[in-house]
Length: 297
Image 1 (cartoon, one colour):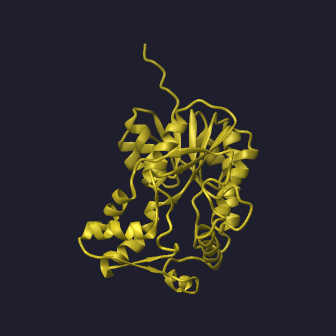
Image 2 (image 1 turned 90 degrees about the vertical axis):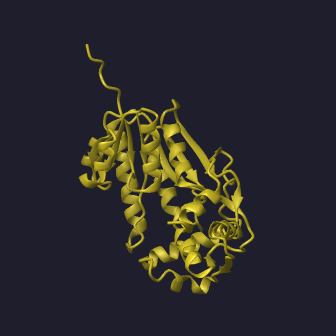
Image 3 (image 1 turned 135 degrees about the horizontal axis):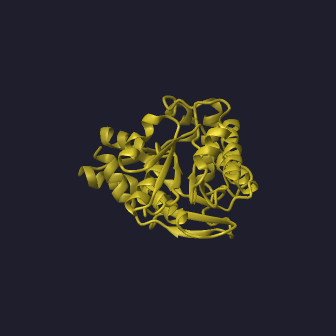
């Protein structure tokens, strides 16, 4: 008699870094995974690795409820679409739809990607969308762990590319010697996969940073060590941010959100330790490993 297959772990956001890392970690652990994608082509790679593929639009309640039904737990993300003028409203729609779908599907537990600073009511720019996500999911009644990640090390990719070409690393973070918590997206995915496999109830808040805090100067030093040549750091003043981001495709609302968030990161307002209810989770990937990979692409 053949044993009934176990229920899958649902993972959304597999076209992004943290979702892909979470799905990969679960598959490597021998777990049954269901990836949630909008386009069947996006699931082909995962199907080849043995994952189940569910097609859903994050703003469509019916398809998302179907994708989240019959799972052990689910990793959910709210992809932020920076080209939209209504990006905050759209993010709230995704958050509300995800919450309603999770409740309708009776998902036992959710792990949701969030950000440090999501405990702040204002003054956080883009992070306000993560706060919306937490609030909507918190109202759903579904047990949820909010994974508040630090500044992604991979955010340095365009600046590292410029440093490789020119020998100068531009940075929005200042001053250049000030270290802040950063984390590799692989560590975010690994933490999400671990939380998905744990049994817990209620709501949890988990902050996630790497093995040390890092400064822009550390990024430049890592690029220099990889290339074997000096790399200078140039801090971009606020007034130059719109020009520096002109090719990023940001809407005016997105640019305003980036500006507010970055100012918060450059001051004491956005602080990984600001929520006493949070539990700390330490990643293991050092900055040097990530930056070396970006510099040699």
